Length: 96
Image 1 (cartoon, rainbow, N blue to C red):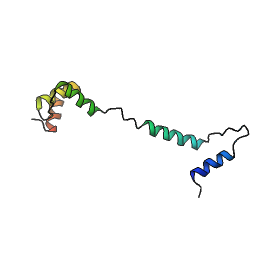
Image 2 (tube, rainbow, N blue to C red):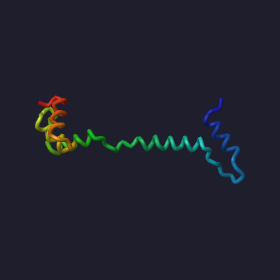
Image 3 (cartoon, rainbow, N blue to C red):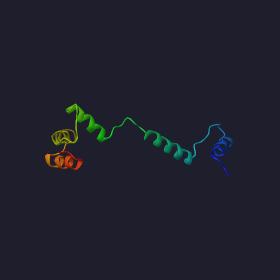
Image 4 (cartoon, rainbow, N blue to C red):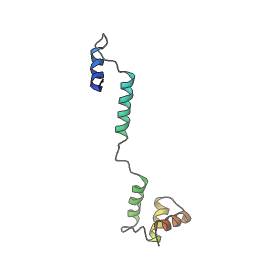
C-alpha cells in the first residue's frame, strides 16, 4: 500500500532536469482544498443573531426579549422588521 509520504518521496526522486519539482494537478487540488478549509474557519465573522443582540443591548441596557414592547422595538430597529412581522415574531418567541 502506498502512503502519502511515499508519493511525495517519489515525486522528489523523479524531478525534472532543472532540479525544480513540478506541481502535479492532484497536489494543486489538495492544496486548494486545504486553503479553502483553513480560510473558511474565520471566527471573526459574526452572524445575524449576534449583531441583533448587540443592537438590542445598545437600545436597552437590560434587554428582556419576553417584554413585548422591547422585543418589537428591537425587531423593528435592529432587524428592519415591520410592526406586523415583529409582533408576530415576538409572540412566537414568548413575549407578552
